[in-house]
Every structure is written in C-alpha cells, then in structure tokens.
Image (tube, rainbow, N blue to C red; front, side, top):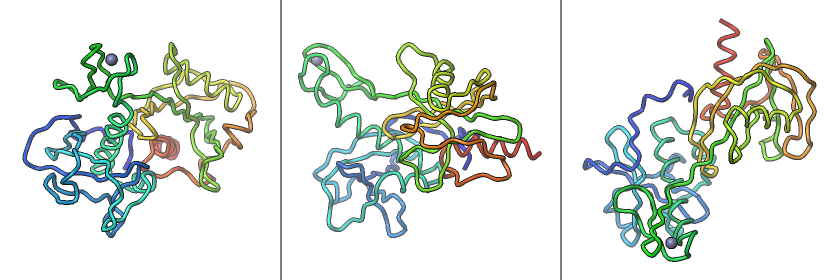
Length: 269
Ligand SMILES: [Zn+2]
C-alpha cells in the first residue's frame, strides 16, 4: 500500500445506504476487538454482542456501511490496541477502522456543549453534534499536521522522537498552528526541530490518522542551508541518511513511508 497513490477508494463519510453493513467494537481505552488472526472483528448490526449499544455511523466504503460501538470489555472477545492493529491493514480496512475510531472519539468528547454546557445530541442533517438550547453545532474535529521529507540529492533527513520503536527514524511532523498556512508550518517545524532551512515545500498527498484526529499533509522539500541542530526533547536524534543505507523506517501504512519509498524509487529510476 502506498498512501500517495491510494485515493481511488469509494469512501463516503456518513452515508447510510445499502443493506450491507459492518460494526467495529471498541473499548473506552481505544482498543479494538480482533479475530483469531489479529484483524479487526466486524459484527452485524443485529449481533447480540452489541444489542444494548448504540452504533454510530462512520461511513460507506465500496457500498459497505461501517458503524462503531464503544462498549465495556466482553470476556468472549479478544482486543488489541489501535495502533498495531491499524498499521498492518490494507486500505480496505484501514479507512473504515480509522473513521470509526475518530467518530467514536468525537461523540464521546462532545456530549456537552462547549459554549453553554448543555447536553448535545446528534444533528439530524449531518455528522455534527447539536445543542438545542443555544443552537451551537460542533463537527468532528480534524487537526491538520504537516509531515515533511527533506531531501539533499541521494540523502534524506530523518529523525527519531522519544516514543518511536527502537532504531526507527521517520520524516518530521508537526501540527499546523492557528493562523498558519501548511507551508508556513513546514518551514517553522523544520527550523524548530532540526535547525535547517528548506526550499519551498511541495505537496505530495494526505492521510487521515486517528492519533487522535490528525490529517497528515505530506510535503517534500529540498534542503536549503544549515546543519542539523536538535532540541533533544521532541527530537532525540536526526541524521542525513543515504537512500542506499537507511535505518528502520515507519510501517508501510504510513504516509511517511509512502513519501520515502516514492523518493527512493525516483532517485533509482
Ligand atoms: Zn450550547
């Protein structure tokens, strides 16, 4: 799977049509019910397992409608944390599992109105949460985040954050601040995290990512000037790596890996 070329799936957020449906069961701590192979377990809307739960509609992929429930742990089911389940999936399953998790997070975190404190209910006309007393509608939160592959000929700049698995290096990423364009965010984040300057970033593609409600905007930028200087907190190591001698990279399901693989393919062709 390559996220840069993987936008041809027929994904329609929230559309509730067709007889075919699947329900993903999750827990309050964002674990996912899995089958005997560790893949997400999907049940039917009329499964006895979820008879006392309200399923939330997430979307329709290739005419199959997906719902999610967040239910107390059931002894008869096995569960796994979201991240390892998600990163092994192909896009047919990644898209709905990601969407279900974000919709459930949104409903859980918007039970009360942020403006007046009254209880909110599902909007009848769209995917929002509506507050009857004050008329305020809140929609699922999406946080744009830039992720940048910095290149210098046959070298790419990769960095390690403290939370990464041992030995893994990735492209640099950071949230877009209020009032900032995605391109401004690229320049600022790169400057803050590794101290180098880059030429104009060029958009590559995007990926929705449920940690927690990110929209990863992928950019590639050529190095302009400066040596690597890390802050030692957000980034614990950063290096230029030759594309023929790369460290452990992020999983294939990530846009970071998609951008790295696309660049290597270009350089080697
Ligand atoms: Zn209100």
